[in-house]
Length: 532
Image 1 (cartoon, rainbow, N blue to C red):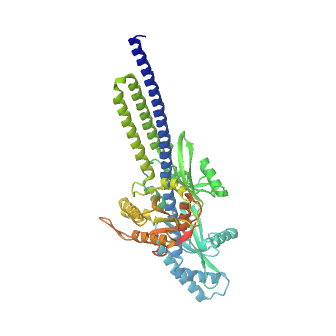
Image 2 (cartoon, rainbow, N blue to C red):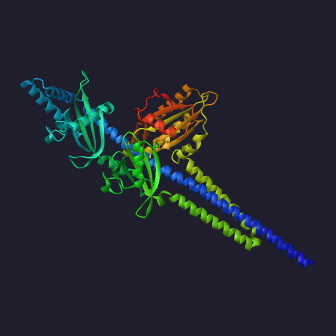
Image 3 (cartoon, helix red, strand yellow):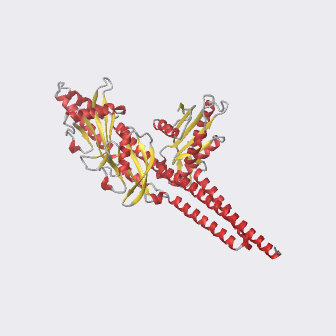
């Protein structure tokens, strides 16, 4: 064989080897691109659902607060002596006792005083349809609208009994009939009744009733900005009646039967007790378009709050990342092909590939940071909590402690002082927790809620040490915050603390919320630790 042929054979062998290496590189890079695309898409999808879930939870919290405030209004109304004085006289007359002229005069005087009190009280309640005092057999004794005094609202004995049972079975005599279409005004309102009892005998004297238009609640819900899912809309459904309570997308659906099959099936599952989760998501089609619905269940009310939006908008970041990484894969393929055709530029092309891979890794790192950290406060977010909770291994010797801090009436802070002030309160809350619990992980699990996880090792830290830290952090949080050009904010918090020796999952947040919702705002030194 001549030297010339030897050189050619060497070149052919070198070219074949180079092509093989390039093919291997191509396969590896495409595989890496597919893997990164799948991983990032999955994480951004989860993050999008978590974001909408937080929005749904926030609206459920606002609705619950609105109902609770209305219930407090009714309880405050019935505390006045004018109410009990009038009902006591009405009860005596109903019992058939002898009624003298003086009795009639006393009754008329008591009714006049109670009517004046009712009208004055009503004037201070926003969005009120009416507040009234009723005898046990449902005669109207006083009312915001004096023209209806003397009417009997439920002449039917069975309906009277249903009302009595509702109040007697309700918490502290309160019967909340929910959000209805008022038969009087034909408008949507929150309706409730509260029994009034004789302090001496324990027998019912009568009751007070309240109707609050939902306009104020709807205005509050509509005023909350939703970043990232601007085309979303909320709705609320009653699982017992299978009717829409609210539907921002189509107001004509209010108090009509639910026309979304998935939502209707979900209501049925909650009604029969087969569904245990208090939040989740589902997808559906409407008008040829795909939607995503994130829901939160309010078990005490039997209501489901949903946030719906186009699937394309909810997962817009996922789609963008797929496009970006797809383009990235094409660029890699192009670089490899160019490298194969122009072998003399091998070194320069390799440098570009290294640079591209470095940028990709940096992008992946940045995305991971964005997905697992809360941008505002710098603490870990709910996604990070869901991934880390499985690593805890509590035991009898080494229990795990959890402390949940919730900024009370946070939406009111935003409404009164502005979002920047609200953000400052959240940041300061995170700062206090980070300072006190420097060795532990803090998570922001909701819009106004932070969770501290304190595992123990060899019995340390002790129960009292954890309690002391919780109270110390709480004391720092409630210090007044003076904000320039805004004023001084006196934040309040609800705090729930618990420990467990059993394996835990993300439902521990739900348990702590349940404990928290049954308590008033926290008091320094009075925060108890319960077993979870």
